[in-house]
Image (cartoon, rainbow, N blue to C red; front, side, top):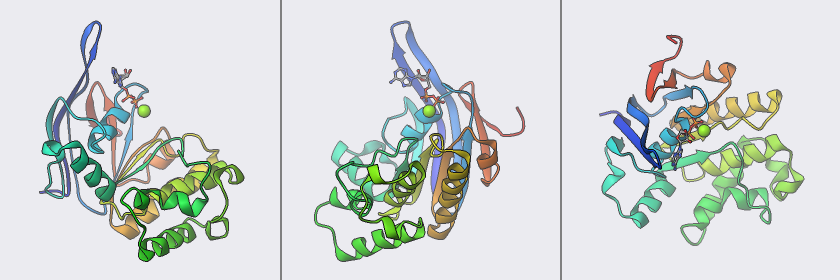
Length: 227
Ligand code: ADP
Ligand code: MG
């Protein structure tokens, strides 16, 4: 079985006019080390799919598994722990905590689990060095540029060595130069960590660098280039 499996995912949202089908049988299989870009029109359900893949939302039906584990039967606390350990998120906005330094922000996923062991602190410092921010470790977000903040968010997403890294338009708020850099960084770090990376992007340039490329249209994944 593939490390990440989504099979026939259907998602209906309740609306005053009745159920609205956003995902209409989405399937994908990815192994560790593989990367997939999702493109598609605004409102096509790209974020909805990432939320389901990341266990932030539940599908109306369909199968999901990460390294053979089906998170569907988990209670909310179990789900929170599973997500914290197995899944890293990068969003369009960085969501850094303004009162914390860059290093402390990277450590937030560890703090969520209690005391921070020294090895995680070391890992956080290594990650900051990998995103080229070792010298900025004590800076608060307000003292960082947009690109630097997003690089801190990437380091934070990788702290717990998640199997699955999910990015929702991670370069959408950046200028082209920084977008390029953050996109490449995600791909490089994912390869180094042997993670599965699924990234939603509007950038053709970025999407082309991914091993698997799909377009989400009418609730389904189409191989990119076929549209
Ligand atoms: P994308 O990320 O591709 O722009 P989204 O996944 O955010 O699209 O949204 C897909 C569609 O689902 C949109 O039409 C949106 O309005 C709708 N939608 C998203 N979340 C909800 C919700 N909680 N309730 C009702 N409709 C929703
Ligand atoms: Mg979206």
